[in-house]
Length: 126
Image 1 (cartoon, rainbow, N blue to C red):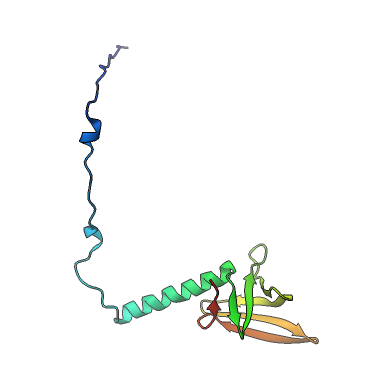
Image 2: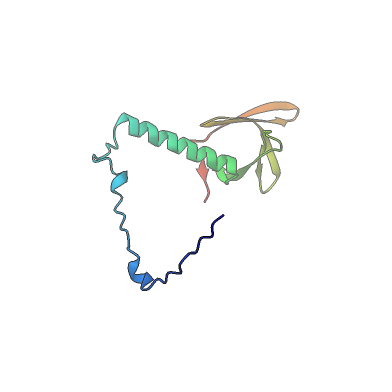
């Protein structure tokens, strides 16, 4: 084995050697404007809205229905949860969560009552 000896190099004026790189976002520009009214853009905006309201619901954000405030409470071990409010607690069990629709059920005087919420029309509270 041969020994390698490294020389010590001193750097002077290191701050002056740093060059500031300007980013003008040209790589993200396709060169043409986006037609916001095209069928594709309308479809993408709808999908983004549906995804947004579905995420808000599943995170447990509060929402209003007929003047009352509710929120979704997730279940354990990948089970569907229930809808609760602050006053009485449990309101109904959730049996299905779709892209734009939530179905649930509750029992009133021994009779099963089905509930369906349209996520597109819910008013979420910030």
